[in-house]
Picture (cartoon, one colour):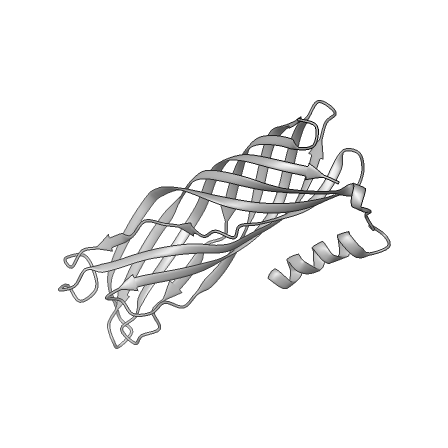
Length: 217
């Protein structure tokens, strides 16, 4: 998926059909504060592959703040295409499945996840008044870490982003304020053992408030 995103960006920024000059390019940085949630399910299997216990947690949510950087190319006076990247990870709190509820019934299982390399390709449409809307296609890696449950296989997921905001021109730079909605495909990860522990996360959604500084050349 990252290759697809990189190809789209390369085509738009470099081909003769959509070639841009320096005066068409904007760069910026953002601070994002978001709330994210989803439904979780943990399934524990015996060494024979028999499902032993299932633990569900619906509507779990967490809050995190992270930075993103972006670059945009103007396709017209009102429409731009851009790509944003989060060098920071988005970290979930640690979830504890008590000994009475899972695993071997004697050991707590502790699991957390990092969402890394969040990359979004988007179209931005802006009115002369500064109001804008964005629609984007996102991809991120998910690294699951645990205590007492072995090593989980890393996975990734795709999703969509929709945002609306306002940009104020301050002369040499612009300031944007926006609200975004995110949704991601379901993901599944297991610890690769015979008596495996498998985690499924579904209905992943989020809302983000974002402040950005942008410079147009």
